[in-house]
Length: 346
Image (cartoon, rainbow, N blue to C red; front, side):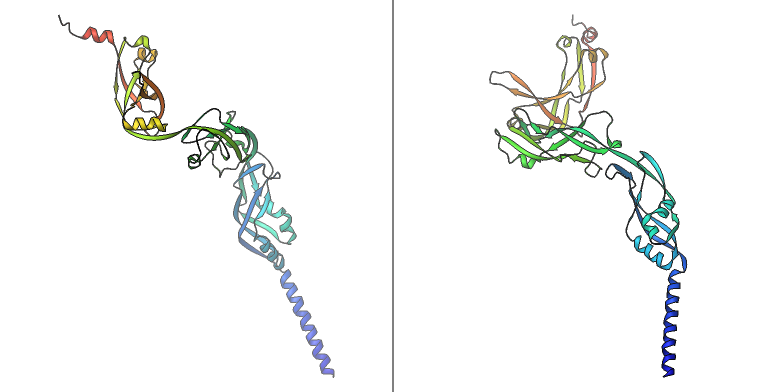
């Protein structure tokens, strides 16, 4: 039976030796490079700051026992949140030091020895709340009476860098034209409309609109259509007292491919040729005296004939030259000079 005791003793010693070896191997200190670490940056007051960049990938070198390094590797499989002090402007963050002091990493027993990069320059932009007036946009219709918006003002939370100084902020409640086309004229409609970010900004910019929707109430008077006119004559408008004193020549005398927007009934009359449209260059007395060389079209008018034989001038919306008012070249001369230069018929 003595040999059985020796076998058990040998097995026990072997097992203990293996356990000690395994433990020693796990506690042997080593250094390892991790190339897939990812960190995110956050200010203490969450939602009150925009940090750029807000995250990054980096490489780290880590030392510790094998067990500790394995724990640290598992810990770094998820993005690590690093705290940034709430200071407006540029802040240089010491990544290596932040990682060394990170409580979660320290609990693994491993230690960060280096990082690549070691530092990063962050930009912190504070989010502030401002009031913004709401403007209703109702494409393709003309309304009767007042358009009521409830609430008429909303709160916009956005970074200071996106705010336009002291200029008042305006947001738009845009109703889809296809929805307006289904509504009956002459009765009041109330729609819940989503608010669109201020001009120059998009839904991807960091901002919050509160409330995100408003109620818009209106009555449709008429619908608006568009027509493209191949040519539109250009007229010159001058003050009454200056009409006999100056002769004005213009170039061009016709504008090409002008898109006119007006009520459906007026568009039908324009389309039939019954109502012509003209572009008007309005010249002031000072323009005539200084004999300016060019000026943009001031406005467009529809010349609507009446049963009495008179003509009513109806303003219309029109655009040409990529939406800009086209400039007209001018040649302004004094009528007296023209008459003096003409040969005497006698």
